[in-house]
Image (cartoon, rainbow, N blue to C red):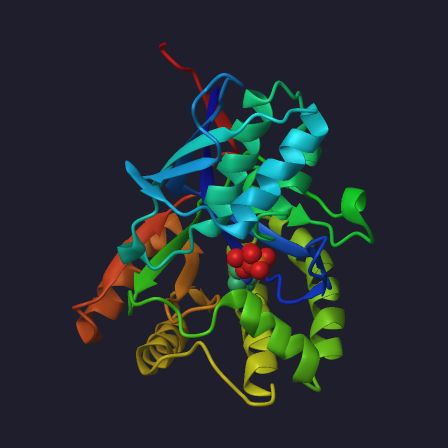
Length: 326
Ligand code: 2P0
């Protein structure tokens, strides 16, 4: 048995499209910041052969749930590598409130991969854990590592993994999650990205631009240049969303309030406060700024949108193991 904790991450250069959905290989590399606020804790127990249980068991927040194909895929890979045939019990708790407007599949599959591998007696390094987590959810490959993380697209299973660029972030960057809508997303990210790949005439341009963005973003991170990191992240997010608007049929993750927040961010930037917006496969924007500016940014937005919830997140650690007391 083993228990692991993993935090969610925000992509500054996005992952948007698979070239191999069996192996979960992306078309382009991506780059993210692991956060310090929202995490998943997962305990995996491989049951003795004499146990009564005749299938894997998945318990979410204390309640038994049907096990998803993605969870089964990760468990099967672990059993294969460890040469095990035992069934597993997975007990998981999400400390990613749906009310925060952040996705939880990244932290969930990173925690599952780490806890499952250790429970099976495997000793995997960060790269191997990242590969394992990727098979559950692409963005989970990045939540294995802390701070700024790059997921190399690679060309096959073993070359597609994430690693830290800067594990200990020594400058005051923060991400403000803005909750504009907590309903489940209308187009699942895996469906949305497949639509963009198949039908957007801009898709190849997206791949080329995102790959080039990895280099410019890495330079901005090394220079500790928060306005440049923010500006590059905002441009990259809009390029990703351009592939949904140009898909056939077109779709978007923008809601009216998402656009309103973007307008306000642009207005406060003109007034001299450095703040930038990024957006994933849902309507809730994340703002990038310096910690010392976060309060002023939130106050400025609250003047127009006082009803929204704002959560300030700093850089967070990679996956860790939690010691069991029994
Ligand atoms: C990202 N997103 O880089 C991008 C930006 C959403 C927009 O990774 O199909 O849950 O399980 O690999 O990782 C969300 O997609 O998708 C995501 P699958 P995942 O963070």
